[in-house]
Length: 325
Image (cartoon, rainbow, N blue to C red):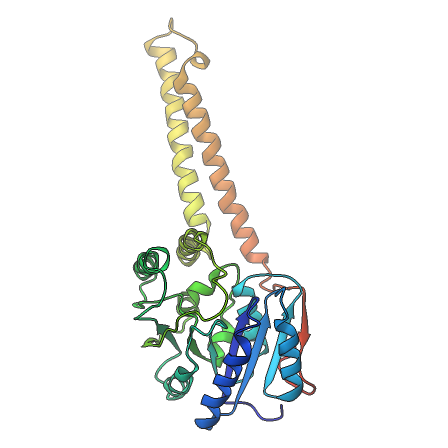
């Protein structure tokens, strides 16, 4: 590809052989009608069906299509990260491969970012075609907690349909299960202009969801992690050192009290080592020392950490294309 496309569409997928051809045709039809130059980057997250064979055949026919294949399943966050590294468009959109995200939204999302008013736009599936008990209600609780912790007023943090300025996705590093919190990561990286757009949500046409009920537990744990890293990620001693210091002072003070009580108040009483309070004080001091040491080691790690993460992947990119990893 010799000319930078206006729009990059990053689509991670896992075992979506049935939906990919229809999704590709739908995207091409919409963007050709809108006269937008584009590239589509498919990221195969370790599929076991024939989805990659279709991607390979399509790459040979359409030079706007690119693909990256993971040798095993790493997760959606790692797939998005690989796609972000490879894309070259001025604006980058992400969407799921299961046909529940509508490509009809892409031109308007592009325009919203291209106008310069936003760093990123997150989709809001206001009307959802999912199970009320298994998805809708837990999703509302999850999004409420995310708004409370992050301060970002979005209704749907986990919507797969999002649009970004290219420098946002080149700055933000998506890892673990943090694809749910890209808006939070973007805000923490200094991108404050985060908007929201109501988008169409389609019923799943093929296959089934790849995410189980445990995604909500993981989501809340990741949210706590993000909050902690935002507050104490650069100075862990402020958290661990404070707790450790308080526990050390409490344990040491209690030990002094036991010693004074034994020497001056009740010298004929039980030995200090025979009193349960002694072990409470000793345990408190040991835990306090460990908290303090954890904060100290955290400070050392931060000063020497390497932000580069490597994944074992295979690429399938057309010749003379940019964005090789």
